[in-house]
Length: 403
Image (cartoon, rainbow, N blue to C red):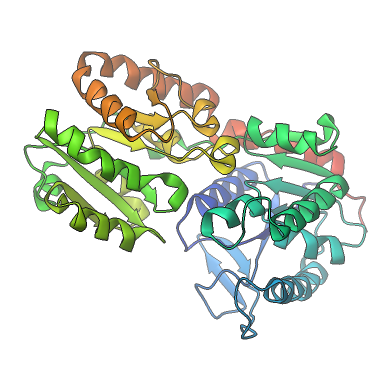
């Protein structure tokens, strides 16, 4: 009998983020294996007011909750969020009677699951550590009291979950260093559905004209605009790039907390005519925007978060046969082989970023090999079917006897 798996999530589709894309891929692959999946989102999923929502063949149980009036920086606010999640989770457990709880980070989901799971085995999936993300968002100070308290809670959960999965080697090493046995931690890496990405597709010249980029070499970024992505460094590199390659234009596709600041930077630096903000685009259209980028740039800043966590976007770029320049943070080094699947530069160095872009543009003769290598990497090592298969032996070991 196939296990009944209840996923506990921070947020989900229809919201678009690396978090939701990974979740959707996992759910599809688990369904393809014949598993029954159920899905609960925390109060931080704010896309709907419904208690239950059907999307793409999946039923999502929503946690309805009204803000308490406390600021998001208050520990009492987070405590209220977790209590609401625990109440809703208890209701859903009674309804769907899962064999396993598959709880996805942050720890704000894991603690409520620990409170109400009774004897149901719990698989905890760590995609990033909440305390590190909070530092980047400015809601916590590195090594401050709040940071240390959150880290202690995370470690407490890690030592008590029945098994832990995580997305990369950097996070696995950190989890083991907290006193968790190595055989209780399994890497289920980020991946792509290669069938959804047309390799080296024909450039959409109409879209390029529409964006005012016809006749230019276009470099840029596709994704969410968070501070740790280092997009401000890309803008600071524009004058140096333009000095030696005046035909280059920068395109940023997406949006997020940094968007207003980046737009202001482009204006204040006098480079607004060289930078195009394409805005958020439907997921189905993202490949068209990838296609008009000659070079993708991932200038992630050097910090604990980016050293530990691997991003999803470079894998999409490799599946599409795009050329990449990326900072040499640990998360990138797990995915990109310098000179084989992309180009790496010293993280945090604007001049090095500019030089890497110029070098990549000058070495177009090397691009066909880089494209082939990148596509081969995802086809051989990073498909969702292969990645998600790693859950099966874990869940079969954990599955509770029939109740």
